[in-house]
Image (tube, rainbow, N blue to C red; front, side, top):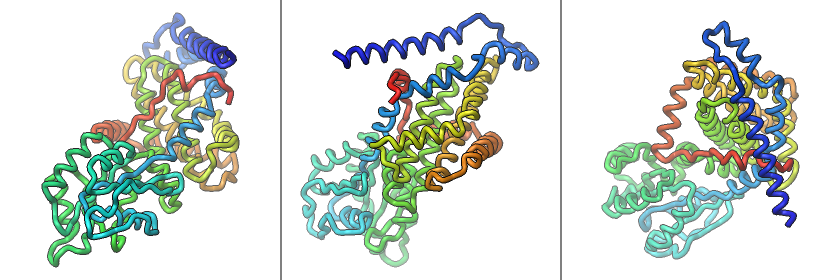
Length: 411
C-alpha cells in the first residue's frame, strides 16, 4: 500500500514539474525579429533564476542512475569463430591465464566458458556447437569474430558471419594466427582481402599466440565499438582507462547534441541532465568508484555542484538559442554538446586526480574546455559520426524515458 502511495506521489510530482515547464514555455510572448531584440526577449521569457534547473537536479533519481551504471558493468565480449580459429588462445591471452583448454581437436570447448574479468565477463563460445554459440552471441555487448589466417576465408566463415549480422550487435572482425602465414604474405594484406570479401571495414590482423596487435589494436577497437564495453574494459585495465573515458564522453556528447536539437525550449533539459549525471557516474565507475554505496552519489554531486553555476547558465543559454527563428536549434544543439563534453573532461581530471583536484581548477577547466569545444569541434562532423555509428551498429542510443529521469525520489 505504501509503495502505491509513493508511486502516486512520484507521478504527481513529475506531472506538476511538466506542467510548470509547459506553462513557462507557452506563456504569451513575442518572438525576436532581430538580433537586437534577442537579449530583451531572452530576459523576458526565460525563468527569472535557475531554480527550475535546480529543481530538476533534485528530482533526478540517483539510485536509479547508479543502478543503471552498476548493471552496465556486467557486459560481455563474446569470442566467435569456427573450430580451431584460436578463440581459447585469445581468451587466455586477454585474461593472462589458462581457463579455457586450447586443443587442435575440434570439440575441446564444450560449454560456454565464463570467468570474471573484474566486473566484465568474457565468454568463450564452443566452435562446434551452433546452438551454444548463438546463445553466447545473444548475451553479447560486442562480438569478436575470429578467422584462421592460416586457412584464409572459408565458406563456413562467410555463413557464420551472416549469422552474426542477424544479431545486430557491434562486431569486430579479426584474422588470427598471422604468425603462421607463409613468407611473402602479410597479416595486413590478408586483413584487407577479408574486409573486401565480407564487406566489413576495419578487419584486424592479430596473433593470439604471440600477442601481436592485441594490446595496440584489438582492445582499442573493442573499446571504440561500444561505450558499454569501454566502461567494463577500462575499469579492469587501467592502461585503457583514458581511451575508454573519451569513448564514453563522446557517446554522451552525441546524445546531448541530438537532444539539444529539440526545438521546444526546456523539453530536453531532463534528458540532458540525465545524460550528464550518468556520464559522471560512468566515469566514476571507470576509475573504480563503487556504485553500490552513497560515496559515488556524494562525489558526483559535489563535482556537478562545483561547476553548477556555469552549467545552469549553459542550460539557459541553450534554451534561449531555441527562440532564434532560423538556426537556433543548431546553436542549442552545439551548446548542449559542448556542455556535456566539458563536464566529461572535468570529471575525467577529477577522478584521475583521485578526487583531490582544487574546485577553482575544476571551474576553470570547465570554462576552458567549453570554449575549446565551441572553437575547435566540428558539430557537423559529430552529427555525421553519430549517424554513421548508428547505421553501422557501433553505437547504442542512451536516451532515457524522461518520466524515469525526473522521478521524485531525492535518493
